[in-house]
Amino acid sequence: MAIIDLGSNSARLVIEELRSNRTYDEIYRVKEDTRLSQGMGQELVLQKEPMERTIAVLKRYQEKITEFAVDQTVAITTAAVRSAKNQSAFLQRVREETGINFRVLTGQEEAHYDFLGVRAALPDVRNGVILDTGGASVELIPFKNGQAQAEVSLPFGAVNLSEKYHLADHIQQDQIATASATIQQSYLDLDFIQDFQQQPVILLGGANRSLAKMVERKHLGYRLSNLHGLMMPVVQVRQIFDHIAQMDRASREHLAGLEKSRADIIISGLLPVLNLTKVLQAPQVIFSESGVREGLIESFFEENE
Image (cartoon, rainbow, N blue to C red; front, side, top):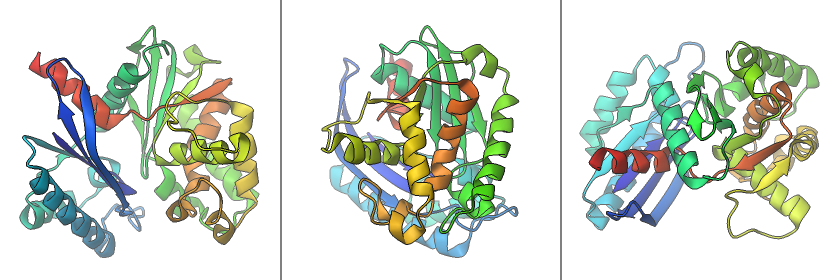
């Protein structure tokens, strides 16, 4: 099975070998930054240059899928395309030029697949709140005793927060404060927040992976073979954020553990977790390498049983 995950900031292709006993092996993986949501603004229109970049990447992905002769291709896309007013025109052009037919996930569907992926990969974590930070949305899934209590998507993420609050280069503290106040209010409006006080936050998404890698380099001093399941006290999240918030974009580009291409969206990308842990008074965060793509595979297994 090939899975293409077209997000607001990046496009990913994974090719998995599935077995009848519900196990699978990843045999190919690639990620490219496409910044599809760049410049959408309040008009919510996909722009020409990001669309061109994205289609060029998808053509390469289709070539790789043909090379592997997969049995099934699942192509999903999320917040940027979900909210775009020119969604239909873009997806039609993608079909015509690449042959790939995308399914546009609703925010709730994206959150549901995130939950399935995390539940399968972290079975010992029975209670908490999952946070998947994307380029143009965040998904939140509170769960108790291994069961989801809600599956929510909110319309802000690393790219659109960076553009809206000017968080790409030299950053003013009042810009961070304004963005944080808006994010916290969005969280406080959710019904489940008070029921999940002092529960851990399970982190997914590119910005949160970057956080784990920066902590790995700064505090551990060596590279872990796998960041999956890594636990971190919230005070450490705040220390990392405060450190990089003092830097300009050029300085962040040379930060150990951070992809150079994320230097302009890492501050905005960490605001969702920073503010969620504050609202929940969460003691720690836990990193998960499994999310929506692994959730799709779990769903596939369930349907075929």
